[in-house]
Length: 143
Ligand code: ZN
Image (cartoon, rainbow, N blue to C red; front, side, top):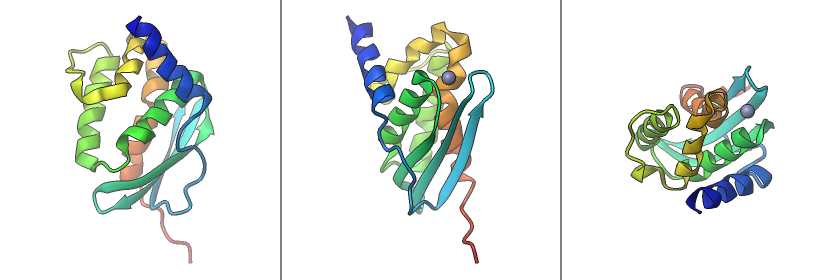
């Protein structure tokens, strides 16, 4: 029953991605491309110092990629880079089949089932990798 519930969370996010669309106030952005599956997402963040004030994404991908990126954006809003990197580490370890304490993951735990499908792991982590690069990629003001 639990896995059905999890599947519902993923389907819901896949069908109705949260925080989807251009973020006009973005200060940082990066693109993630998954050659295995063809998923492509651009994650745009508005940083307030070390904290994610706002985040949105655009792009297209498979249901797992869209759901995972949508859930990631909902999860990281209002959190600091440090908190986010810690959770990504746990999440990455969990989806690649490592030992992980799921507690900090909350709803994200729904995606941990992808560890049974090794070629989908990139789909589930793409948005996170893009976010991680976005932190290092400020948008330069055009003159
Ligand atoms: Zn995919």
